[in-house]
Image (tube, rainbow, N blue to C red; front, side):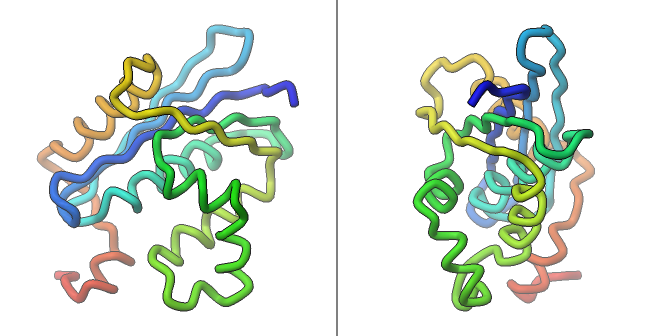
Length: 159
């Protein structure tokens, strides 16, 4: 598949759980056009941020059925999709699975596009992955952090 957009993603948490963030770099193939997105949360997990980064990247796409390559260092996200686990979890109503709110949100946007996934080793000098990591860490360290309401409610810590 010839991709129209590359979405590079990373998630971070300072403690697991702890304050966390995600970073996304999107590139329109063949144009030099590039956008970056990030957000930090006061209490979340690394896996939630990894998955949320992919979701946000896909949600930023303006046209349906775009051909997308998502590049991530998250085996959690990539394996869940490429090995088909998430589709089995969906059939079972995500019973006993973590992050059902995000997986449902992911599947909704994933089905609107033609998405391929590529795993890259984290902290291995991949320029876009390194930039996503910088964005995710910066987001997690901001003084004003968003509330990951689903996670905090599930953990019983919502203030």
